[in-house]
Length: 504
Image 1 (cartoon, rainbow, N blue to C red):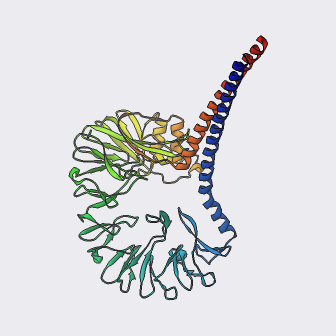
Image 2 (image 1 turned 90 degrees about the vertical axis):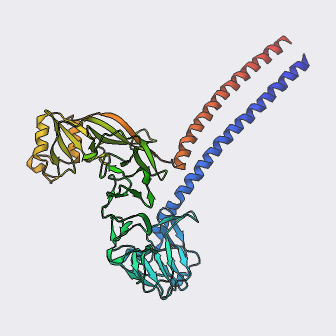
Image 3 (image 1 turned 120 degrees about the horizontal axis):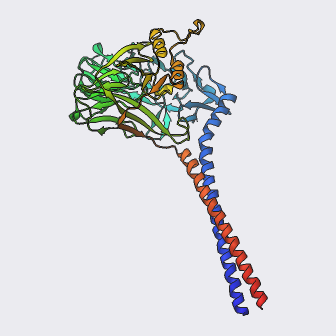
């Protein structure tokens, strides 16, 4: 009896010890998760707090971005944070203090010229000359230096990019061409030579100064594109989407120096200047295509569902030989509300609206910037052009009553936003929202034909937050269950021990 009793007590203690070890492991895992989370958050916030401290308590050099703080000199690099200059001679450090904003991140001491936080060893600080458009020389060596930060592939850090110009002679600014310079022999863009460029016929194609063309050649930045200048080059994009170079003559499409598959050309671009779409569509020989900005390549959305000639009749709305189609777009976020949380995807839908017969345009509202009024039979419709970035998601609305129709028609040409003094209301974004809210404009739902989806990578901090909370809750519930199980086992064993002692 006594031996069995001892064995049972030993087994009970052994189980108790095992249970305690299990609990310790759970607690350790929980603390490890939160330690990792805290470290990530600390690292992510450390840079911004340090930058604030430096800007508040440091001493700025003139109108530059350089600040002396606690015996060191720092300079901000957008997306990278603030950096301290290594090996700088503080006593001789100075800045240019020119009106040109690009020079605000140029520093000099007795030994070096600094492009941001980077010392340039072969530029003489005592002979530095500002050429303009981002170009600098000391009479011997010349550089282009960009005031816009970029990710450096070698260091994986953000820097102000720079480029040494070899064998440059008497560099001069090219007037009316930002980021350009000439030396008599060559044309330079950001320090790179534009091969075979004809200076006399060179023109900028886009407002961002990235696409150029002369009488023969076409360039993206300094890269020669595999196309000849047809004279029919144009820039196409949705309101806030990717920007493409489109050749109306050949039907070729480019984004940056990426070329759409020429075997599928000619492409017909649909959605240019559209406000209710994230992605343009390009209709090729064998299907409908788009560009995935995350995967950096052209993708096929599906087969060509359109019949015959395709024509845009309004922003966001187009026809083929028989039907009317329209775009609609929405984004998906990790939060409970569509405006909150991390961006997960952007989606562009193509909807079938109706047969194109008997549709008639009545009038543009404020030259089409607001939208337009259309008619079919005795019914009137509002085609919206305010778009998703004004939080008006639908594209086609039915006008519900004559009073609303007449007001839209009477004030369609009024360019004034503030006419409330006359007891009237301007046709603007707020007015359209009110009409929708009061069901004066009723959204029309068509038949969805196709969806284009761009998926985005999630941020590591958000992931840690999301999944650590989930893990914690799971571990916590396991702990509670195990705790209750352990308690019940203990009570059961105590009861057994009591009855065993009672028998003895």
